Length: 331
Image (tube, rainbow, N blue to C red; front, side, top):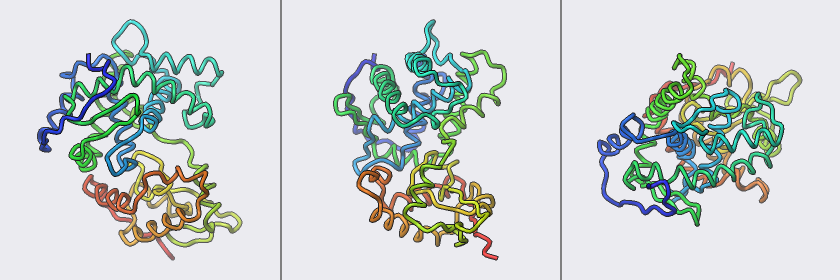
């Protein structure tokens, strides 16, 4: 009954990569005694926050609950995949979301990103309570306490350093494995005959539909010019877009320290490629300038950012197969 635990202490035993793989294989596969898709959503949320972790390898419950809620909102509300467990009643997170949607009269076509901030925070707080009861302890039990520690009172989640480094090294593979097994279980529960259809839904549920709030912040503090080619974006007919410096398909989250203003041409040709390494120093300088300029009320947008994180992100993305380097056309 590990899901009932309110505190889980970290088993400090040394783990090799082979041992970590073995545990992940059990957790993700049918060998795990799972009755819902909760653990998949938690793993997706951990991956989304790998580079938001603090120096003690800790994440807050709010950080994890935000990603967790976003996954289920988009599956349940947008795609009508309501069955997420093997019980006769809906999973508690699903019930919470459907009741919340009904109470606030939110249309099905609304992605989580389209909800206003107050509604998002209210729902995340509700889902966080469900995670305390049903989620944190369950994955903790399946990993024998060797992956992370948690504490409901302090609302903190601490990854083992070796597991954090492992997840960065094999991030893309873990994302693909988690998406596949989650889609496979949802297919079975909802009696959907085509797993390729479901994979598309599971792969995209975490992505924001709009980067407009980040564009407004960047335009407020910086001149309207393309980070890559320098094109003036303030001219008539210029299209200002926001690009993930390290591709979203790897980092799986939207953090302003990884977002830059881009012209449409650069954004379209770069796609999911890495910019040449020389741009790393430019974005580090940009982020330092942003830290000095950003208002105190907006400091959370740079929470836990350090230069070494974006360098690690760049290097680990190459190790995960993002080795096609892009250079802008300055002609």
